[in-house]
Image (tube, rainbow, N blue to C red; front, side, top):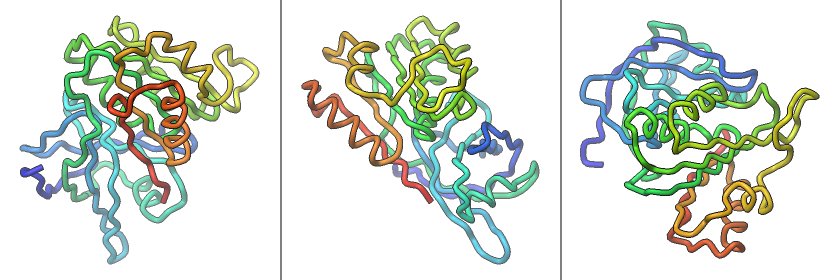
Length: 234
């Protein structure tokens, strides 16, 4: 984008989403505008060194803060992000990326783990702005504790009659009554019986994105109706 630039910002809040993930909410600098699903580079100064990584913006442009959500991988940047406290300073550069809603009327979101972050941004945006876009979210996590934004998706379903969220767990606890297992062809066919003309947004680890893309192609979903975003680990 032509208006990409660098901004100084401060931490407002740090939220532990799960044992394995944390959200950091930054002040939204004046003039920083973005589309739901885009990402930005964050620079953290630690011990005389600048740590830089790009992260998806998990907040929606309709919200007053800039939020990023990161899996805690043990990488120095992840550790530095989790250690932030309100008032800490950071530098951001962005926005970047084309993995965003662009007027589609019918979409399916497929995500695994931390890959749900851009989809949360898009779902929140669609709900807040009253978009008529029909959204079906298929989201795979390890356990109930690892489901990111779970209560928010429940609330968004109540607010948005065009949004349906389907969560499946690979390691469910004894109290789980929802779907069990990874997202596979059978799950997609059952959750999305009417695939004609629907645009599929896939985000998550590379192996998961490639597997979902292969399944959709087996199901004869045209290439132009498949979009993806890879989430590399650090």
